[in-house]
Length: 300
Image (cartoon, rainbow, N blue to C red; front, side, top):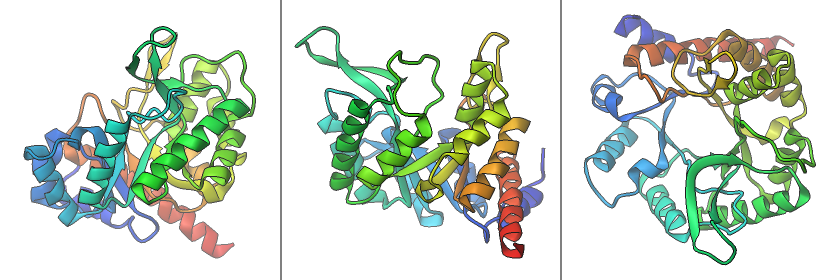
């Protein structure tokens, strides 16, 4: 385990190039507040702070006094044909007003649908993939614009690690997000781990496929990058956010920085949480790569 001083120095050295952050989860909150590590930002899951009060929200306010906070949601279900959940959107808007986050993001997924025609709408509590058809694009544009109007700020939309695909796929996924950004005014949350996981499950060269996906993006739409670990189960690779960032993900991240420039970068870790110093060390590794990418651009 890295020492406190080494971890702090590693992260702090990275900040001039672009902010580096970690996903802040409840077991680390007290230590984080006490230690005040020099991160560029932290990211929390929006839905964990929807209550009107309580200890969790109080701690988040304390964290916000120390470091910028990014809100990352999993429940807007932006690709749902039945539309958005008004209660969810209202709670998110209230949280945004309270915290004044540096960024707000959610996923290009659907989760809300009736079990039968004209029946009540249920939430599947999962990030289910959407088809990249013109109809799905228009639906996403409408829902994203509605969120942005309510929040009075642009939204970042993350592409998925998906374990199924639709038969009626239309646009290539990068072009789908290029058009979504142009038509709605949103940005893209580029999750490098998701790209590598999808490529591995497709049985193709993970680094080459993920880099080609990134090359098809308009660099201007990328507002944040996510890094995480994955679990190789042999017959399938799971995006479990439960380990250090793997080699192929670092390779693709370096390529992404060459294409999109220095972008705020977050290390996600949601299962089998390690000591806080491990997360800080991973953030430091991202920071070193951000610095190298920034230096390379200056010398061109």
